[in-house]
Length: 325
Image 1: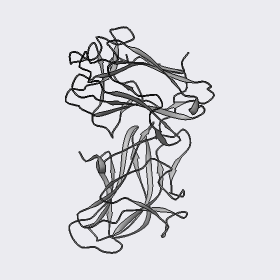
Image 2 (image 1 turned 45 degrees about the vertical axis):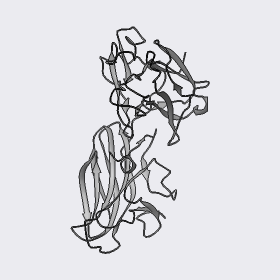
Image 3 (image 1 turned 90 degrees about the horizontal axis):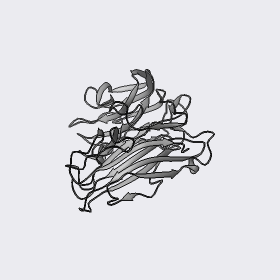
Image 4 (image 1 turned 180 degrees about the horizontal axis):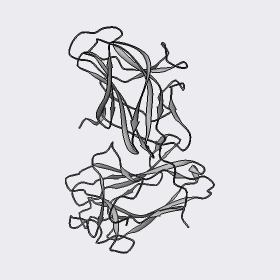
């Protein structure tokens, strides 16, 4: 897997239409990810609307230039955008993908025009790719996109919120594994499969469920991202978040590190608590995190687990809650 050229980020917002027209003059309004052999750029040459639009990167034969984003869609809707192409007809294409499936493509001399596609509720990845075949260049040999209207994202959860991950052993609504990491968090009951690491049961009752990272075959320094639903911190003061964690590796001292990040103001902020690293002993510990810096914001959190030196470095979390009462 070439993560340098294939990555995605989750985007969420709280209200209204989500429109990307690049009138900020950059890619900072939403967390876009670039891929392929050359990055897209913001240009002022004949945009469909306003002053700016996005243009595919300068590539040569048998190369691609990708622009990518992922969002959670709370209800069935549609995505629309304007596109323009100047390329070798029937050979070099602007391609549009949803969740890795080719949805549409254009080649030749294509003027600005709007197109739209249905999108079902759930997490989706959207990719715009300019593709060149093995020979010949025609026209300006690139593509442009402008004025994207995204489907409405998931609404924020209003507090209070808590989960013990005991929903019949299934991932709670709104929680999901990231797409930029190496492996997934898993929900489980009882002990983890490997001996000498992990708890004998969950924190809540000993017989419920919890999330953990399976370090066997995923070490060393493998990353697993677990992302929460979107939460509203409106009208809250002195707000805190609480969860319980278990990080034990018997006497091997090969335990990894647990990080907590926050997505706020359209950016990921890493390590809003001091990372927890190393063998913590065979018991559950409470962790309370100060969120006063994000009062009034709409946020989501990311548990970022990094495995240790070998298989005996399972990281576990349970009983997530905010605000702390």
